[in-house]
Length: 117
Length: 110
Image (cartoon, rainbow over all chains, first blue to last red):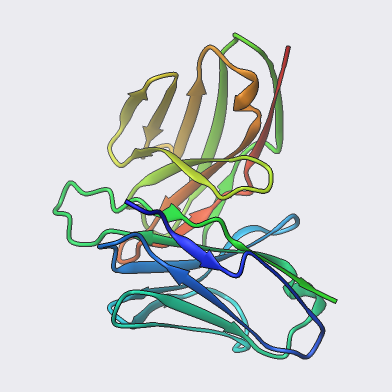
């Protein structure tokens, strides 16, 4: 079974631009979460989607948005990029509905490394 | 509030045993996870605890005490490839997303 895939893997943008990142979860996984990882802040939660609905959101400004499609694929968008948005953006998927003993472990994709100049 | 604490860095010798501690204070608890992350790579799942006690998986074991808000990851028979960051993460009720600690960078020396 293929793992979580993310595209693109690397991206260079300039301040003020906007960017869209894509994530395809493991087949059968319906929950997708996004994280931002920086050396100073570590892994921080951005948002979580399930069945095309945003279920939870982290403490990020409104410039960060996302969505999930009917096939569980997800995209996140960052508008008006700032230098501080340079980070590794990680997507993770998990299986829902596995029963009361299911761990619903999150499995991570390779990430998109975004550099803002 | 949410607070997850881990040591920043640890050093150990090849073949030895190392214990990485994690303490947490979260508004709710629905499981604790450990992930391994090599430099430049994505985190990979190591272990999961939701009940008190020890979970063993090969060279890796993880322990949880919910009453103390404490967990540890035990790595036995250390190998050079175990040099990586180890991330402790807590899941709160009603969500699948995790709250991560800042990670412990483990350096295994010959």
